[in-house]
Structure formats: structure tokens, C-alpha cells
Image (tube, rainbow, N blue to C red; front, side):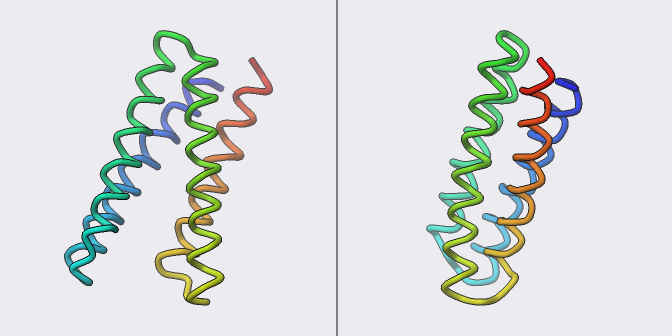
Length: 106
């Protein structure tokens, strides 16, 4: 289950990075680019941690997914548009589920 959670974290990291880049290209939003890059780097850090201390890496990944879920929820409630807040909320929730399940099964 830890392997599956690792894969989910790295995929989520890449999607968050892609979202930040798309936000910058389409809307010239520097905050979007910065948030995407920083979030992706932190998720990559949690991915790397899972190889040295799986529990700590998954806890960090879970916490980051939770924070991104909250951020996506706030964005979705303000705009009432699926993109980008609703998508971030959905992807974060899926990541939260996968990583939390892996933590519970440890």
C-alpha cells in the first residue's frame, strides 16, 4: 500500500506543478506559478522521505494534500468554477484518501 501511496504522491506533485504552469501561461499569474512550484517541491520532498522513513513521508504528504484541499475549497467557494479550485479540491481529496489508507494499513 505504501508503494501505491508513493505513486499517488508523485502523480499529484506533477499535476500540481502542471496546474501552476498552466495558470501562469494562460493568466500570467505569478502566484499560481509560485504556489504550483513550491507545492510540487514539498510533495517531492514527502515522496523522497517515504524511502527513508515511510511513515513520516506519508504523514507529510497527507498534511500537504490536506492543505491543498483546503486551498482548493476556498478557491472553489469564491469562484464557483470547477477550474482550478474544484479540480485541486478533487485531486487533493483523492490523494488524501490514498495516503491516509496507506498510513492506516502500516
